[in-house]
View 1 (cartoon, rainbow, N blue to C red):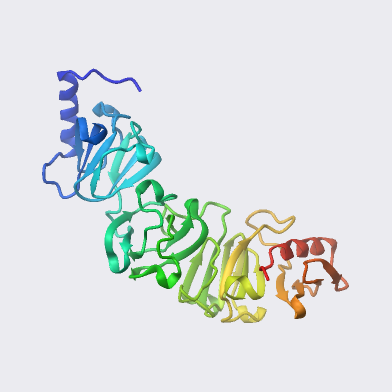
View 2 (cartoon, rainbow, N blue to C red):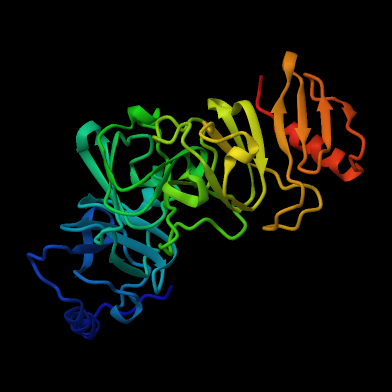
Length: 360
């Protein structure tokens, strides 16, 4: 971007604009942005949201930052759009490590509300702290990758994943102070995190992305557990063998009786399942994961006759449909027989289901 002249008039314009920001030497929450690395060159200090640096003559000129209070989000486009990073209190001598050198166009407070999540470096909320009020697809540029040991969730549901971009194994944490992630098998393994609760604009699963809700009692009563990705074991979540009804918001989901997708499993399409006892799975769900869409089923719609995957004797398999169709497979996943009345489409569907069967 073309730089403005640095004369007295430019400085006066910047000073007048900064007066609107509220510059204070001892503000409780403020960030100072510097033109060059290591806090050199011109600087501006903000203690409130600033949606556009262009009128200040500071657009795309920030190379280092010092956060004296609060948690701040720096974005590459005006209006807090484009790529954003979150900075905690401290001195950040170069934004190159974040891929944001000379790219900052707007800045605002982040994590100041009750919806923020707080990550701590050590158990019992000790060590360095990282607070986020927005989805964070990668903790590596922020210097917090695989370093989270305890978490405080003031409100909402947050999903923490072991890989960037919300991939790999994920856990979901509700409101409360979680003094150690060891109980979840997640100590020093968090690489990305996002909001999951339906009331929050950031962090909602993308349209068409898998989303499921497990309820403690029939007819969607009692405690609820939400997931947008695979959960290898519900025991650390406090929801093992507890599910009695299910709402599948989107995607196809496999629910299994044992951890690691083992034991008897059923496959559920988008829809409401008021009583899992009708599928012989009441209080038996220990793991779950999204599956590929069924053949010929429009995205986001339920297909009639949703199948259930069941393990037979001697490591054989069967796929059972609600209309009485059952397709049988050997231990290698090869189709061996079908009940009379099974359609060709059901046989194809069953073959796709068996491809997603749990590993032996």
